[in-house]
Image (cartoon, rainbow over all chains, first blue to last red; front, side, top):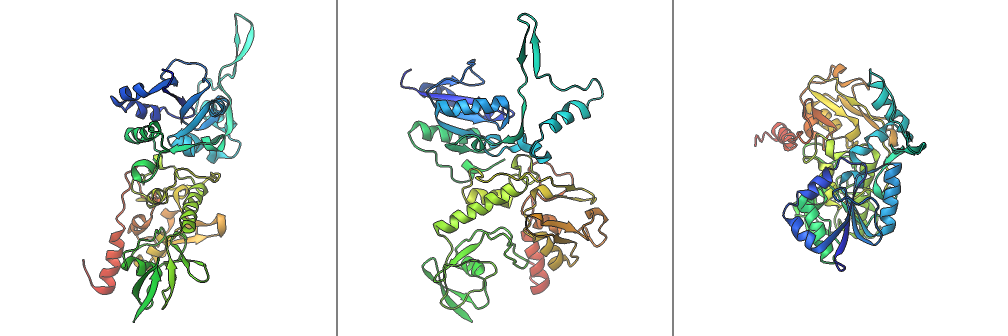
Length: 194
Length: 236
């Protein structure tokens, strides 16, 4: 176990489609499992992003305070981070709300939870009271004023575009990385957005 | 009359009055383009075809620069490659180009060019302008989010259809394509609804109503065919 590459996958503001595409690697996942140790992932029950990660695939844009804190920790704890899919690389669909302006969190909540609701419109409650300890907990992370691509927040080593990136593209990147090479992102098969 | 010039170190011959772009293509050298389209005149709007002229080191658009005797042209240098990638990134950052939800996904010349220049991400801040989508026309729509101001629609409507429905208003970052006198497209009574602008548009900006993600395929060679048919009576 000690010599295996420590791989993490992270899910920020995205639809999880990139992770679905990752799972589309099908039986190659068995080969991958021989070579890597999956130390953090939405498909593994680990709560805290660990230290000493070799490669982290980051799906999704940075859309809320949780995303922001996590992506900073991922950068600090990982040798290489990969912007995984169009939301991480460009903001993509997650960033559509940016068209509303540079400080649009309130407008988004207003639109989603008030304007289009005719029964009991209310914003998500950011704070709930824990009735056992009588303390307050934040359970809904506040939205950032604007959605950002990952590289707008932390330095990114490799960009893996696609909505979602097709499984063969993910495999090509991971294969090159495991061989100790920097992935060559050239041509339609590797670079097409959307 | 034939002229001789040097392109990327190779001697080539070209017809007098030909553009560098045409001369290069005749010689089998491909120069990336975006606003250029067979069948309509060139304007040098997108700067993608910039080439370097030896001596002055000046960068000129290949589509609007005529060849001359003894000219030395470089179309592929590290500097030009970097500038082309910068230009594509700036286009992506200037409007809201979201390939994943675009009608032209998979059939888009801007998307193809991004692949060609090796764009794996955009290094500039996105501007996220609030742009309109005009669906007032009964058959077609105009999504300004995807418009790159190449003016192909303007030139096609003017030069091939002869209606001149399209034009550009304002300058610089405020430039916009307009229909009629900046009216909703559906209210412009000079529009013949021929659909040539739909075919000419390199992105998903002008589309057929009802087209959804990745459905908007375009037949651009049809426009060159029409032009040839009319001017040279060549119906092929």
